[in-house]
Amino acid sequence: MPDAPAADQIRLLDVQDLDLRAQQARHRRGHLPVIVQIQELTGRLTDLDEARVASNTKVNDLKRAVQKAEDDVQTVRDRAARDTARLESGQGSAKDLQALQSELEVLTRRKEALEDIELEAMDALETAEQELASAKEQVDAIGAQIEELTAERDVAWGEVDAELATIAEERAATVAGLDAGLIALYEKLRDAQGGIGAAALAHGQCLGCRTQLNPGDLRAIEGRPADAIVRCEECGRILVRGAKK
Image 1 (tube, rainbow, N blue to C red):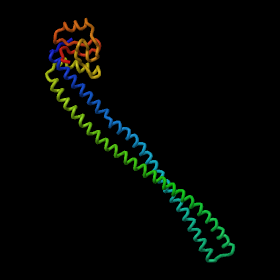
Image 2 (cartoon, rainbow, N blue to C red; image 1 turned 120 degrees about the vertical axis):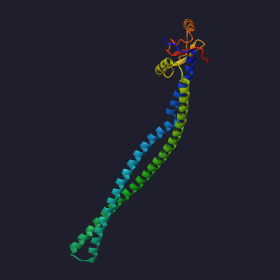
Image 3 (cartoon, rainbow, N blue to C red; image 1 turned 135 degrees about the vertical axis):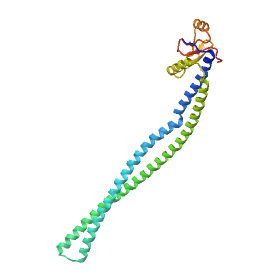
Image 4 (cartoon, rainbow, N blue to C red; image 1 turned 30 degrees about the horizontal axis):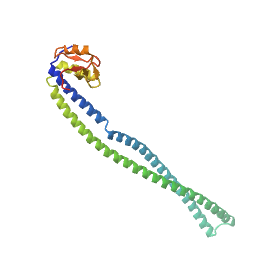
């Protein structure tokens, strides 16, 4: 087991504290309540936008249906107008005039049926346009909420990033001059132990895994030189002796 100055080992706990602060800050950054709100609203926006697209398609289809109904009604009206003009002119044989009269009756019934279709299509179009307007309004409202929350998130991220920058500066100053082998071992253990590579030994307990060391292990540790790097038998972390904890 390599050695490192006792003072360096004690300073290592300051590095560990800074690393934990950074880890907690990064966790906060990724788990801001506003992020959950943005995700939920984004999901709702996707659903609403799909509904808006569907409503828009429906409106366009109904507009074409209304236009077709209007065209059909106008065609019948034009035909009826021509037949009426010919009938009123009195030109043609009695048989022709009677045929015109019969056709006008058919055209009248046809026009009434087509006008009913036209009214139904217009009513359906009006309803669809209202639905589309409502969908657009909701999409705009949710979009505005997302923009507002995104701005809020960015402010919070900026604050955490500033905190992380400060911690990084403090860490660099704290690490400077520490035993290279000690730092290398600490980094290796920190990666393997969920962010904690070193812990104080206080009152016979490893504060990394909260294991109470047995008297025999404690006596063995106490018998080691001050610069000896001691590891917890339970979790393997560096045990720092003499720390004020």
